[in-house]
Structure formats: structure tokens, C-alpha cells
Amino acid sequence: MKLVEINKDNWLQTVLLTTNGDGKATVIEKFVASNALSIVQSIYETGWIIRGIEVEDKMIGFTMYGLDEDSKNYWICRLMIDHTCQGKGYGREAIQMIVNEMKQLNGCEAIYLSTEPDNEIAIKLYESFGFQKTGKINEGEAEFLLKL
Image (cartoon, rainbow, N blue to C red; front, top):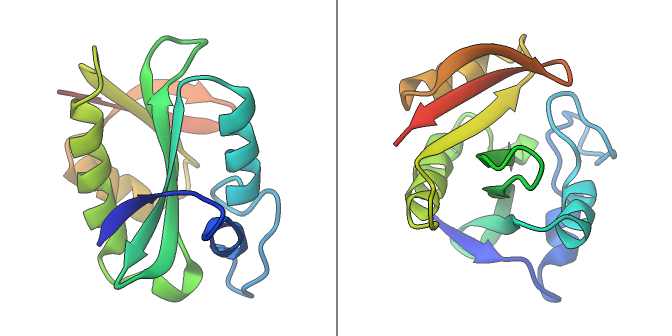
């Protein structure tokens, strides 16, 4: 598995990935914003790094992370694994790779993320990495913090 830059050769593959069980990408999915929306957000807001998640040269997921210009905190803003590839451990491996990359960012001493409060699978996964609930709710999502 590897994190790859989004470019002219893979952007469409990335946009068409979805967590929706029916395989149809939508702007807002059950637990995550679409990759298309995230790519646009990364263009118009500074500080975000976008990466595709590849396994054996096949695009299987997407992440967006970096320094949030409003809060001045480092965030994993988006993480998704395509519905056809879930349940295979790719999310766990991706989080480890993202955290390792974020540790290299200047001034990154803590990483925040948030998820829907009923996304029990994601919450269990994040907590297994040491992310802890902050008790705050951001736009309807439970906030978590990992101190590095």
C-alpha cells in the first residue's frame, strides 16, 4: 500500500471511489464528504494535502490531511476506503501511513480528526491508534485527538 499524489492520470479514479454500498458516488456520503468535494476544498483552502491510497497500482481510497487554517491544528480531515475494499485492513494501514507522514510536518505535535458519532467501526479503529475523544462536537461529528 502507498499514498500517492492526485494528478491528471488518477483524479477521475479518485473521484469515482465511494463508500456508498450501491457504488454511486455522491457529494455527501453517509460518513464522509466526497473525494470530488475534498479535492476542490484543497484547492481553495490552504494547508491541505490530498493523497490517493493505492494497493498494487489500484486506487482504493483517499485522504486529506494537514494544517487547518482556522483552528491552527493538524487534522486528518478525510479518510475513505472504497466500499469494495472495506473490511480488509486497508483503513488501519492507511491511518498508520498518514500519521507517519504527519509526524514529519513542521510543528505537528497533535492530530485531530472527527467522525459521525454512530460510526462505531471508525471510532474503534481510531481509538486503537490512541486517538481519544475530546468531548467536543464539530458540525455534528465527535472530535478525537492523538498527542504525538
